[in-house]
Figure (spheres, rainbow, N blue to C red):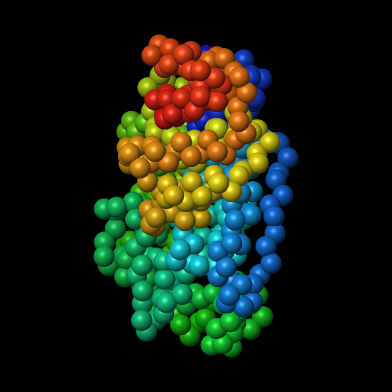
Length: 416
């Protein structure tokens, strides 16, 4: 797994959502691949627009998510800015919200656009923006968090899942953070009591209602004051645990291995200075671990990554068939619908009999492949170093489509 071509594919798999075989063919070594994957100078995409729905039936029509979902998957395939799409997916999973509970595709799309705008910038800005995002307020019950009836759901998740990690705070900290977070609601245009207090707030925007806020003194993580939501988030961002938790999680995402303690300490210290996401990613990629043999294919490929790699290889124009979306839904890996606030499953849970059976269905997302040699199929799927048994099986395939199907379901393609 230490060959130059395999390392080039490894770079694009980790710093993008797929191996980008056409892009990989233009670079000479892994270092050049890293520079290309990190290059943000390519043209920025123009996301589709979605009109703000005003009636309940229109707002809760799940069909509204279909076109923008397929656009996003297509962008993962065709992007000229691989790291951006990888980070957008990472933060989508990190700040997980699900359509099954939010029920308003428009809010899910607004959240996506917020993440897309801030994904490569400041984690501080991203955290503040998602905290008052309409989808997040609905998903984690923030709209029900009032001074006279505090709801601790979001306060607990923001510390456990979004910032500090488990075991770094107390139940008292959760209670005090929940008090600080009180007062935020979403202007749902067909609910009369909200409309009455929304004033000039546009439909579906979040807004602060002072009468619902607990303005008293809170003691949070050793700091005391009449904190509101932004101030409480800043207290959380001051904690060393926050930089450590986020830096470790992004390291595992990009490298596939756990960072050793000295590396994590150094990454977290530098990250905490300005909370620059791009700077953190660049430092992670510069560690020896990123291009180590141990990092190559150290992770199990997710269904989304499998689909993106398949399309990059055999439908590089990025046309995403509706059938592919249905397959992701059957696999419980549909973007905008993670199973819980912790995001999508990872690791060996992706290799169960049900998942492996239905992964074959993703092959319907591409045109019938032409007659291709084993070498050509492996190149299109971004696989360079494969075992002799795998190569023998592919050589014996009776035709091109069968060879593609076997390679797509090979042990090597299962890993990234």
